[in-house]
Length: 269
Image 1: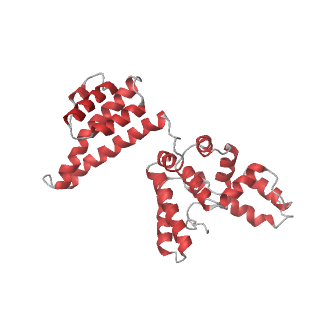
Image 2: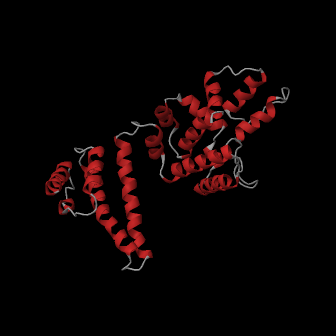
Image 3: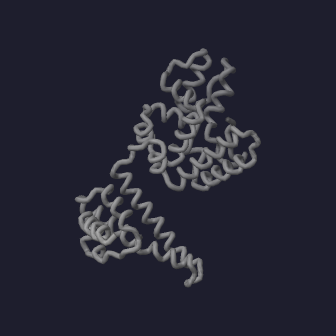
């Protein structure tokens, strides 16, 4: 699968180090530039001898040749997740993740700002639309969707999608934070519509759930008795329909409060 680079006056393409290495593999007498990163240098040196002896380097090269693996690893790197966490979630050695990121998906240099990442996502979308080869088009579409999710939602989406069970309490707390921000933005959307419109009325309902979510976050960070998982599950169960005045208490909300309210609703049903 061919790579999509940026324009000539923009940042380097993500695999720029690998491309530099390829250009020098056959030129055995040419000295390597002093600015070659560590693993780019190792690739050229071992490649010139005809065999990649370093197992971590060999593993990174194998991942690069397998689209199903490469696209997932690139998405995690694109999300901004730390190499150590990516290695843990994907059960790789951290060295493999580091090598791959240097050679094939150098996020730091290819995307120095979020604008470059947005531009890259857009380029993938355009490529998927224009590509005539059915297999390549499907891969471009998959890459576009993965990179877009990685950028807009983050590593939480990738963990849930590809590594069930990888989420921990900290991730779920962050998930609740993301949901709160999302509800806030949805609530603001009513300002873009006439106040009596159906869209405005629907958007207003998000404010109720937003208040609950904010109170839950406050309780979690003030008193660690309820777990993030419990709080999130109960938040989803209670929903935006019934306003719970207890959430306005200075001490915040507890999981027991939420459970009690849910049990009462179940009895009524």
